[in-house]
Length: 562
Image (cartoon, rainbow, N blue to C red; front, side):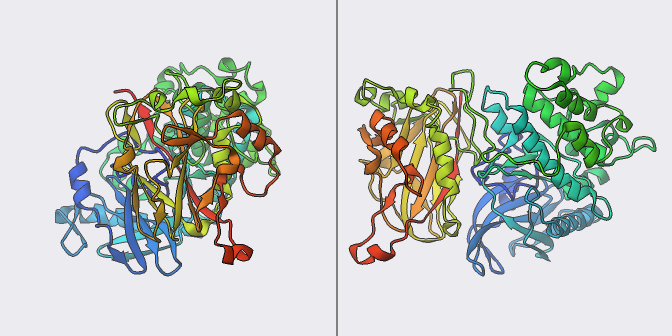
């Protein structure tokens, strides 16, 4: 997530702008955090800071360009702002000598975490490319992941995921935990929660936020509440007693609590409260008509307050769940969406696409889209509800077929915007020069548009590693309601692209894909590229060597009532 908002955690490096993680918990010392941030353009060896992803009480996350390997990556800097500050030379120094021991302990833990993650190579664990010490602190470099947290993914749909979806999720996460738990010495995550699980566009689940430095500092300063998430932390994490030791069962409790949240949309009762009087209603009693009793009882068992009654290792938990090591994975990792209403939000698909329902100047999205231009024989909503044609899934398809060398990234001024108040602004950067196209799906999925270029703004060229900001003044947009999540994808192409074969229809200054003719063309389409990705318009002298490749980024902004 590359939102320029403060965050509570120090493990934000690995998220793209497109995620909505961390919209909660603005720190009281926001200005202080901002003053500690290295300015854009700062070079740390071969890495040049191009944007700020986020910051919190224990670290700062930057979007950086790796000039050596010519790619965009995320860089995390250890920066415990409570007792450290940055001088004019960019170096980290202590506010007081009395804080040295805590600072050094956190620094060692930060480095150990980087070394640990670099040691692992698993698709559901964050990869660390390299780490080093300088400027009185330490840094780690990781991929710039684009995705949406499980918390936001679930909260943006009224549909319950099916049992196969949940088992696919558990398969991936348990496989990652198996790698951690088998390490010597044994490694535990100890901070699994819905906002620490990222769902990537290709359907991969990624386990985030070990928070090792944060945990050590909190232990030394006796700030236990900083490191525990009530509802997800088992009883043994509150008190290290002889009969309450931590082990794999500690992570299993948190993982089961995640599934409890996914199914019920509620965080489980904190384990310390349950120890006195356990009022948590078992899933097998709550959701027996939605899932198999055996599956629900296995989650209930992992949520047992006393550690000795939970599964003791990954293989035991897999057995209870009925998950084998050879479990086939779901290809799209997709939960069907319920059309949005004022009460329910759309599902923010995978790479965290949220677009706002838009207005231009003071017009609402519905006013801006002249529905009289829609053919009367079939409505956009009818098309969108078709089982064969899901525009959000089409955005995913475009994204999955992208050329990663473009390294397209999005920076959003606000990941959440207030209806009838906040403007919608975003910035686009690409490692390659080309032409920018923005596709958008409206809140109720009935508006599927080519948003940019448009009748007001045809200047869609972008220069390599230079940022352009949209929308421009000619088509300024403000959140117009209803509340919920809408969807964007930015495409950057070597050559201009033609979308006319999709039977686009003009609607005000934009063009829409929602028509009966579009649907007919879509169903008959046999091409290799995604139908809605457009086709490259190559110069005649390059026709034989024309490349259809493009870069892409999914991104999001949530619309809320204030």
